[in-house]
Image (tube, rainbow, N blue to C red):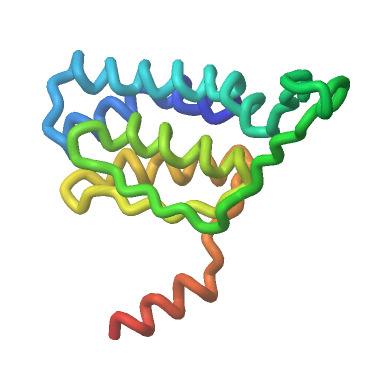
Length: 145
């Protein structure tokens, strides 16, 4: 909810980034920002389903008055690849549910439109999501040299 609030507060900056970076017309950029805010506000409903569920065991005489517990666990690291056409909305809809489920996420935005994804990452850091680990970032840079 806090991330949605920050994006709403900086709506004009996000719109401008989408216009400059992706070449979107103003109305399309505004629509993507609004859709992202709405999605972030509604992700709370999705988070409730992540926790697991109870399944009644009343389908046979042997399992009468029993229940099964479905426990969902994180996968570990999730790679989210975001396309050029909806860089903010797609990044948000991939990152947030994976992180709410307890996974670490690596976002690979389009090299054509990275600004909105970078801005989103900064907002998520601001609201308390972990920052990238500086040593692993430096290690990756050394690997590229």
